[in-house]
Amino acid sequence: MRRNHAFTLVELLVVIGIIALLIGILLPALSKAQRHARQVACMSNERQLIQAVIMYAGDNKGVFPGGPGFRIIPPGPGGVNTYEPRLASWDTEAQNPYSCNSDPQWGPTFLAKYVGNSKQIGGCPGEPKINDTGSNNLANRTSYWYPMSLVYKPEEVMFAGNISSTPPATPQTPQKLTRVRHPSNKVIIIERKSYHERTVTDADRGPFSNFAMGFVDAHVVYLNSKVMFDRDINWTGRGTEQAGVLGRDVP
Image (cartoon, rainbow, N blue to C red; front, side, top):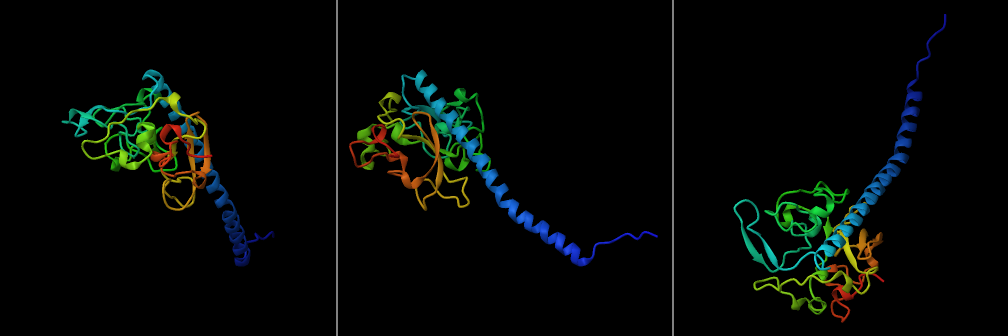
């Protein structure tokens, strides 16, 4: 009579050990592939947002999003349309053009129509889901940094003391796209954090890391922040005569 052969305990342990070894080999590769896929999607978002800024400029006398104007204050239902000297913001709030905010009750609607009112394009795939409501920076409306060096005069960007955020705040003066002196070296968008790296750090402080960043000429690259002249792109070229749109953020 034919007898069924059962695995011995030793054989089972060997099989389990081999499976565990394979998992240990494959998981890091899989994790790296997932991070790379998110990085590619993030860079695609940045390209689309740059194109949206360029289209906005084409419809608005050639200038970048920003400037003085009117918005709902306080934001949300019940607010009043009020004059605001600084419509654009760099932070994660709805006033950041890259939030692509489409609801005037939360802030300006700079780029919404140029991205088909997309509610997610302003978020990096490597970050937890962004929100499409809310106004302040705690609302987490975007993952990307919009540089204030695009909406103030070069002579104002040259020294931080030239720009006041307290009343009466210095009004924004959105610069013309054509005034950018080095379009392939001037950052127009960058991830706020190194979302695609094992250790997540801020773009403007802390250890150097790799970030997806896009430029005025619409090219997007994945670069280490150590190549940047000034990691705070709100103050491109500060302390020099090549400040703001006249300056460069990378060599």
